[in-house]
Length: 176
Image: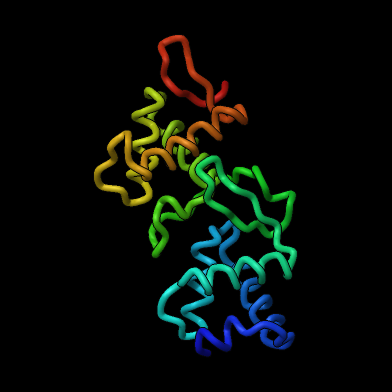
C-alpha cells in the first residue's frame, strides 16, 4: 500500500482494515507506544517512513477505533488493551527487541525498578533509574538524557503507587 492509499479519506474499507491491524498490534504488544504502532503499521503496509501525514492518519485511526490511550509524564502516548490496564504494574517486563527505552510504558519501567530493587536491596533513586535504563539496553545514561528521564519516570511511578519507598538512608527499597 502506498502513502496515498494509506492516507486516503473516505475509504471505509481501508479504515476498517487499518484499525484491525492496529488492534492486532495492541493485542500482541500492549501497552505499546503510538510510535511503535505507527512503525509496525507502516512496516506491514510497505511504507518506509512515518511522515507527519502518516502520523496524522494514525491519530485518526486510533480515535476511530476508540483505542484506550494515555499520555506519560513525558508526553509519550501509549495504547492499552483496556482502561483497566492503565497503571497496572505486572511482575514482568520485556527488554530487547526494537523498542527504544522511550517507547516503554511507565508501568513496565516500574516493574523493572521493582525487580532491580528486589535483587539489590536498595539504592539512591538516581542509581536505580540508571539501572532501569541499563536493563533496557542503554549503555551510558547521563541524568540529562531522554533515556534517564524515561527510566526515572518509571521509578517515580513505582514510588507514587507505593510499590517502592525511600528508607531513612535515602535509598529506594521495596515497600515492606
